[in-house]
Length: 413
Image (cartoon, rainbow, N blue to C red; front, side, top):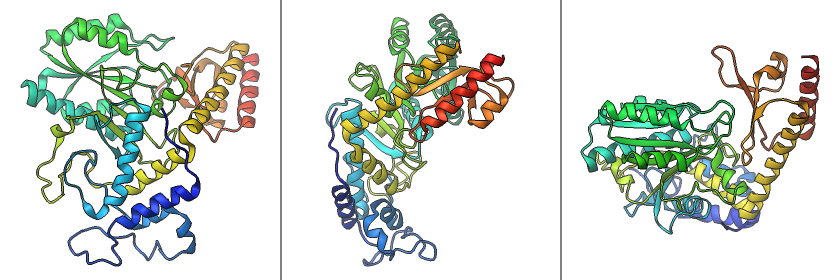
């Protein structure tokens, strides 16, 4: 895993060079496109500081990155400069972080993990229908009770049934007996094709699904399946804190991965990444988009090139070495909080490679939860867990204050 750290001047040069390769709405004879630069009544492009602000300059230039630029198809040449930056970003994520074979993947910058998850299920539904002759009622999506709500949202949109299995309360590990029973029921009722969604850090707990157990059961039952990894939270921390991670494309079980840039990478909201092995994007080609060079393969269609530029800048501002250090520093802070919780006798769940701690609700007073914006496992009924997340903005004095008040409430309780 290696990509270089670039200094500010080099990053600026690369982005402005890419913008110079894009067509310019102000100086060129562009009549046929419905897009334009940002409204100058609100966003004036003559500000002197913009020459040192590549991301803001890209926002104002407003490049459209519609389509999937890793495919060997035509592309909208008018934005070719910044599209190349997006391709390099996808290359780093696929090859460097998730160990894909060179050019053995496709992907694009999506609006977030939700869109990327829906894109994956959309692809696999169409794959099973087109390649295996599957009927819609024969396809099911398999996922745990801790899985992000974007997956049931996707099944609802796509008309696919769900197989939701339980996890063990304390360890958040797959209840393999429950999964086997649910799978048997699904097979009995005519399900033949399965999309298994595995979590690389669940939203609430930071738990990671056991890919060996789940894939092993699917293989044992000799069912036709594909595995998608929801790494929306864990994708930019887990590979850097766990050198032995098997959540990569080097694992033949994994076919696609979604990652959020607006979580650990601190990019603006609306910045996600979808990655999939080569030769699968074709199953969602929207041929009706004939006016788009290369047509469209994405759920969102038009999308801002600025989001891709921002993420590329962040990645290169740190480099792989710097990012590894940053993620491990967050993990060290998380581990220190766990030690303090152990000393108090507070029960919690923590995956050793993720910066999330889920604390049993019996230790958290309503005042404490409100004061520190703790997130419960449910707002509908009585919460069982509250989570804390060790993000870059969390200062040591905030941690100390929280632990001090928690210790006081535990002592009183």
